Image (cartoon, rainbow, N blue to C red; front, side, top):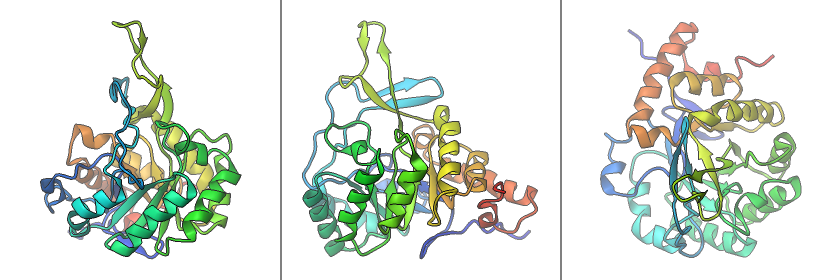
Amino acid sequence: MKRTDLTVTIGSMELETPVVVASGVWPYEPEFWSSEKLEAIGAVCTKAISLHARRGNNGVRVWESTAGMMNSIGLQNVGVQGFIDRYLPRVAACGKPAIANVVMEREFETEETLARLQDAGGIAAAELNISCPNVDGDGMAWGVECGSAAQAVRATRKIWKGPLWVKMTPQSPDPASVAKAIEAEGADALVVANTWLGMAMDMAKGKPAFDRVVAGLSGPAVFPLALRMVWQVCGAVKIPVIGCGGVTTGEDCAAMMMAGAAAVEVGTAFFRDVKAGAAICRDLAEIVKTQKLERVSELVGKARP
């Protein structure tokens, strides 16, 4: 029986499958970068990378919620030089395209982070994070409005010469307009989107579960919201869109692609099953056959007028 073609392209980059590991999920331990663990994965986003090391947020960082989970990690990381020295060789040699998730800080800080990554090599694309809901002073503040989003991409494009993905925030009141502004400044692809703002109450303590009160909600609970946003953004731009938010099954992946997404990022599903990517791709192959198509890329935009 002929094998279903699951390859997709995002700009000049070809992925073996449309499943991309979302940032903040994949551990840096060596065993997770083996071919067995990365079965059916098209690309892997690193955890957040900032110029200097960050400790992350205090207090509770992860909280289970109905049909999902909440997190308040706060972009904990070892800084760009720590990443280059400790993790980049492993990431670059994994056999899958590595996408560096770069924190949008002050412009000069982000420019320095990108310059160091560019000089180090081994990165297939940069994913500019203008959407983190778990930090103050930067994060999603860059991505809510057109002007600040455009400014962030413009600063990045001065330094980064490779493919540039921009991770949008669902907290924007007008995602289509923000997407257009990002596209106009030279982004190669959009990731739609990051976690939704929510909160949890610790009933035993009688106070909010998180020190920052609000945190990022992910998982199946947000999938319908993410799908709607993907539909809106795909109708507004010509560059590729990577759907992100609650993708758990092959059907979810197919729905995102039919709405216009070229690929999907998967996050929370990997906390339940490290081989979630393989399960999604098996189901996706069956959906392609049921639709009487030859390759998964034919799903892209199939539901659009």
